[in-house]
Image 1: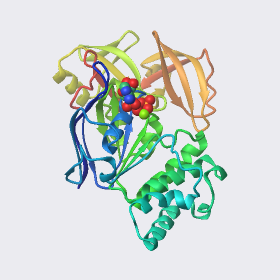
Image 2: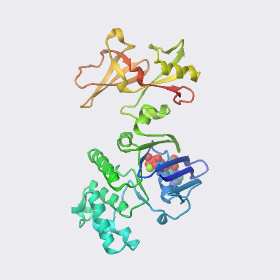
Image 3: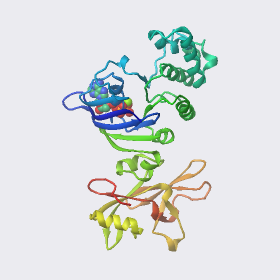
Image 4: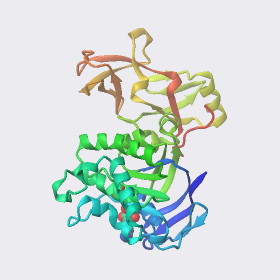
Length: 360
Ligand SMILES: Nc1ncnc2c1ncn2[C@@H]1O[C@H](COP(=O)(O)OP(=O)(O)OP(=O)(O)O)[C@@H](O)[C@H]1O
Ligand SMILES: [Mg+2]
């Protein structure tokens, strides 16, 4: 069942500044959707429109079948947690969580039950009597989440709620948030500009650029079937490598190599009918092989150990190309590496439109 529908939603701040140009999206019941995109692409603007904190220039917002586009924020049944999650410093944790419930005249017994339930969910039960100043950043963050969950929202919005936390806590809070989502079942939209955060948490990722959606899909879909060069170059650690190529006599030609694509891809290129293309290759799809099997040979520039693997940068024409190799494989800067591509994992884009060519 659909919880939220956005149709052609747009926000214009001034004559030349669009916060959101046009967004259409369905969010299903209990889904965990992540808005991902670079700074300024309109993520916060969209969330604020859904919450009712920003007026809408164009388009509609439908929540559980009800048009809420012009409703005041308090009547929407939407809870929002912000990047700078202000919890009230003069109230203890219990009162912070109970505040919105008291405003709604929830009776004492139920109020007590609901506070205990969400406190348990976010694992801050022993802290209910503490004041914010007596807690760590991660604990305060959990109070903010509990406070938003306590009202049992129809929709739960989180705008970069982990960005004030240190790197280690961020990663552990990802797992906790996922657990909280599974337990509460609250339909959620989560905003981040961190692609690995999006990949690890989302049921579905909505990738945005310049106020518009460029792709919507599961983490696997946006990774393996990236809709354009922007998505392929944004998702992945490191992201995809790109090579300008020309389609000639059944081969993809690059100044340094010639590649015969597998049959399905060959057919898709023929059907597409354009010769100037961009080949996208993910770092783990570049393989080190024996010299006689190599597509090309490239000198190593830098080796970056990551523990479980290492990222090796090589020079190909004017480009720095990154590949992933096992740890302690002894590769040194200056060494020449014979390389090839996993031909089942190639991405091809139209040079002009930058869009993925269809049909493979
Ligand atoms: N109140 C405002 N008045 C005018 N322009 C605004 C206002 N708020 C945002 N903008 C502009 O709208 C665009 C989208 O901003 P928004 O804050 O939605 O981006 P964002 O994706 O949340 O970015 P970030 O990742 O940096 O938080 C930007 O160009 C921004 O400068
Ligand atoms: Mg923002």
